[in-house]
Length: 113
Length: 113
Image (cartoon, rainbow over all chains, first blue to last red; front, side, top):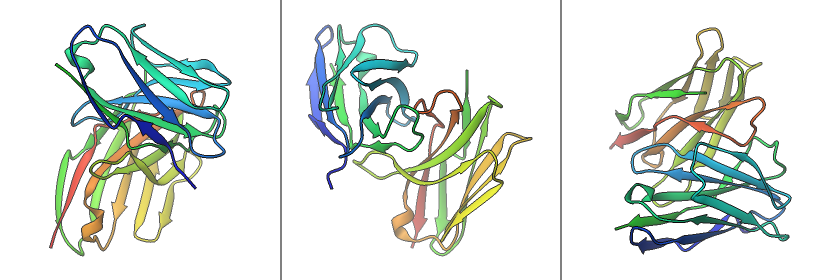
């Protein structure tokens, strides 16, 4: 049973560029949440997608946007990249938006130069 | 908003000894407290959780205690083994924001042989 898969695993961008990260949820899960984890810190909630809509959002600017497809997979887009956007981006899936128990992927490591 | 503080940031214990990690939370409306283990190159993995109507929960060598009055909760690992070496995160979830996990800053646990 495949868990949460994320791609790419690593990528390097320059300031001002745009990036798209992808996530496939665990089989049977229909809700995807995204987290940003800066080096040496705990993950911070970006937003949650359920039924192809953003349901909850953390304290992140509009440069961070997302999408969920009918097959429950999701994308995280970040525009106008800043150096401070360098982090590990984690995708987590769950069964329903009200579920407490999340399954995390291994993350996409973004470096902004 | 909710804030979770975690101590210590690093912890080194002799193999076979016990390890204790402590957290405090600020929002009394939080009702679910998971603990995650993150190994190098992997996403956080849920290892144990506790709900606000329970004071203690144990799973083999791992136990968690919750003091709602003091807003404290702790992770106890007994008979530590080399594979326990990892970063551990405590977290809190507000009853109305199921997937919006507020993580602590993490504890890097090292087990000395």
